[in-house]
Image 1 (cartoon, helix red, strand yellow):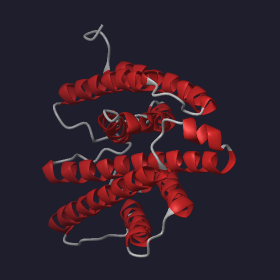
Image 2 (cartoon, helix red, strand yellow; image 1 turned 180 degrees about the vertical axis):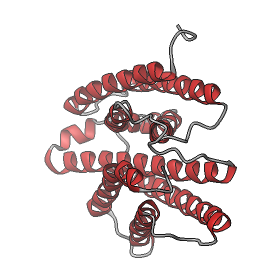
Image 3 (tube, helix red, strand yellow; image 1 turned 135 degrees about the vertical axis):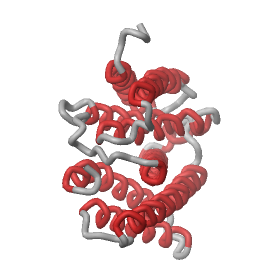
Length: 273
């Protein structure tokens, strides 16, 4: 089976598993997360396995890092979320982070499978070593932001239950609010550091190639806007001690903005096509 299928076939199987995990998550929400459910983690593990095979097959078939087209960038970004969820899921109290990330993985995966997204003319950038590092760091930062938003959704869910259904919150296996808020903050700071490093590497590469650090390219301007938004969120949380629901909602809204605008900006960018 492995030899006879393409990387897109394996990725399609991964998306299907992520979809099943999303459906299972709906049942967990209805039950109130009252037990440490290993099914969600197992589904994520199987989906990530197919996902990893798809990336390796794509990389070996092209003899390069699979980050050149918009399809490849999307599946790499999605893979970072799945891999980090599996790692954090080794701790039982953070295992539900995967369940909350499943809808993101499924939605992004369905988008990646859209016809024509894998065309060489969409997002191909002829990556070399420095530009590959730049792209990888940026996509890893988005993965961290995605997990941070998942932790924020867990926080909002648990906080809502504490306010409206106290018995359900007490019986829930989800981590306490303080731990969820800490996880959100750590993931947010880690993502911001990765984003800053990735932008610095990209600016250095652009300077060497064209003699300037910044151009009016839509993707570059958009990236600076995203950096400024997350800088404001980090400063609000660390310096001005913004906490609770407002911080959680800010994390979710910022990532939603990235998720909804990332692909469109790529298509508008001459440099990143």
